[in-house]
Image 1 (cartoon, one colour):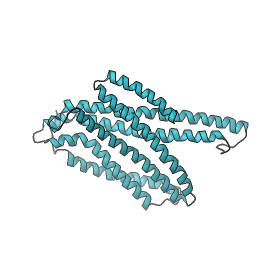
Image 2 (cartoon, helix red, strand yellow; image 1 turned 60 degrees about the horizontal axis):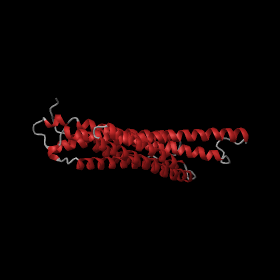
Image 3 (cartoon, one colour; image 1 turned 120 degrees about the horizontal axis):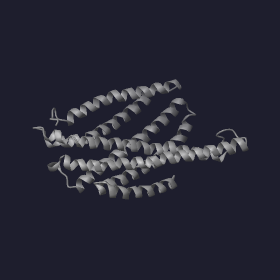
Image 4 (cartoon, one colour; image 1 turned 45 degrees about the horizontal axis):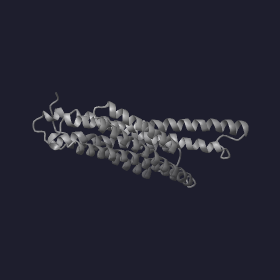
Length: 294
């Protein structure tokens, strides 16, 4: 995994130079790209640590019953997923504040011409996250497939060992590859998808400044609310989903296998309906009652 990320950093450096030379907001976009790539690497490493510890804890808890094992595995996944998304949101907000300070932007000069290029530059943040996620998913997949083929050829054919036998060293390599591709790669992929969607929504929100600026009676704080609205929705969604996830596993105990799907569906439906109300409340508080579209 370390070797994979070292090779990945070489490609990140090359892409940094390419972005610096070809984009309009060269320095800002390139810096955002490198930041996204570094955070994606951190997310992969953090996901690997959480997942490996959750594996043996879930195995130990399985001795006590299905309910304890499911709750341990599920909450470990919740902790990993929301920790990575929260880290990505925090870094994205800090990146916006840093760029805003470097461009000397304040409440007196907020418009499409100033904030539009800023958010276009921040789009490099999502590109960097997806760039590293590609290496994690593909690299882990190649490694685990090579180990799987080696385990089958040597273990089954030559030594006559059953599949996934602990006596076969290639089985350990296969499990390592699964962790790299399905855990580290998935963690980086989760961060990359979050960063891309967040940056895209910020770019779209910056294009609505003309509508707000041409509306009489709309004060400056509505500009800021409009720009930060996507981040507000993400933050509220994280808090709400964490609460629902912990509550659902605490109330609905999974005693049999057929209850696992029911518990997950209840959590999904409950999160969806509650999030609709939260989004409506956030939009009501942050947007003006009317504005002019041109």
